[in-house]
Image 1 (cartoon, rainbow, N blue to C red):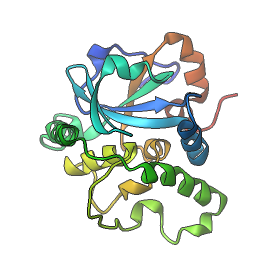
Image 2: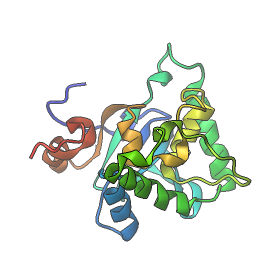
Image 3: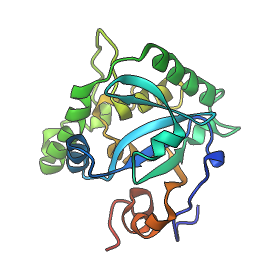
Image 4: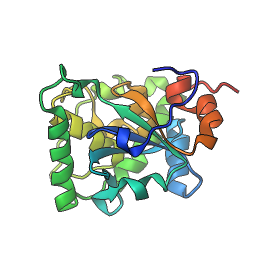
Length: 216
């Protein structure tokens, strides 16, 4: 992809199982905590399931939202695609991911507010004290829980574990904020949804175009 300037997409260019990273806005304490704790601009992440629909883990639980409404909530979205969805990739990956999304949206699997709050704070602690971790966060074993709950990036990771692209033992889904998930480079940037007036800001600050180092 040409990184000389942001590429803005139309909704028609999205594909099922695309991952949508949502940029920081000033609209609330939770976004500020997530952005500060993870030292990143992405405060939410969701999965496009096709036909103009997005599935996400929010306070009401796992829900399906229209893409049209979803994009209005954030300054811009970074649209990313899993390499495993290519023709020579993981068999039936997109359908499995979408099936996972539909299943959990149908029962409105509960939201993990504590997980959403904890993940960026753990990242902040790690940044300030790298010796805190005896193992990388991705290799810390997953603790079994009696009842399944998700926060946004945990939901996305679990969807791609279910689809067979991410190995169960490779990533502890409860340890990743949206920005930390972007930094894992599991998904490849396709382009952006939002106003082209933000092109300069995106080129200067967006993680996928800067590698996390602002051009200012």
